[in-house]
Image (tube, rainbow, N blue to C red; front, side):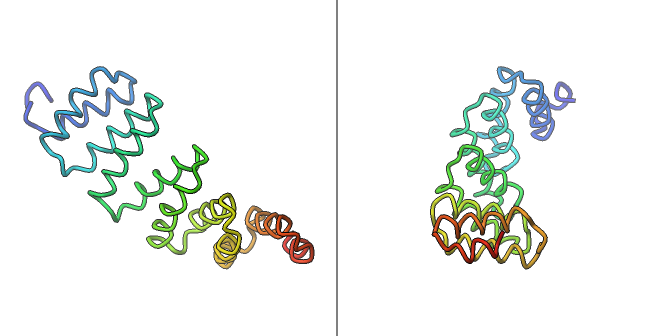
Amino acid sequence: ALAMRPEDDQAQLNLAMFYVRGDDLEKAYPLLTALAKKAPASPDIYIALSDAEHARKNETKSREYLQKAIELDPKNANLVRNLAVSYLDAKEYEKAVPVLEQLTKMEPSNPEYLYMLGKSYEEVKAYPQAIATLTQMLRIKPDSAEAWGRIGDIFNVQKDWTRAAQAL
């Protein structure tokens, strides 16, 4: 299809993604960089570049491309989630917190996002925010053993033995 329609940006993007998924980054990069110059307002191109950098284990550059995609499509919760997960995987909780705050504003009833934010608050020792966020999550999913355990751990760290015992 690309040989018959070389001006077709979508066909070029599809081919580049095929190369990225096949770990043939040498063929993917020229297509993606040309597309980024030709259609700089397309979040899909930056998502593909992010995937390519992730495949190269260059997480910093992968996040930069993901942030560019988010700038172009700021209401896409999946992109914001992917950025947050990237920070969590790297244990960069201080960077994950604002991204997760943005995500929970987008989807305030999503227990997964609330849990990730609560755990991140705990990791940066913002204990009141962690407890409040995990409590909010428990209103949605009251049987979450993980959230109850996190709250118990927080009270334990704060040496609030009574509340720790109640949470556990």
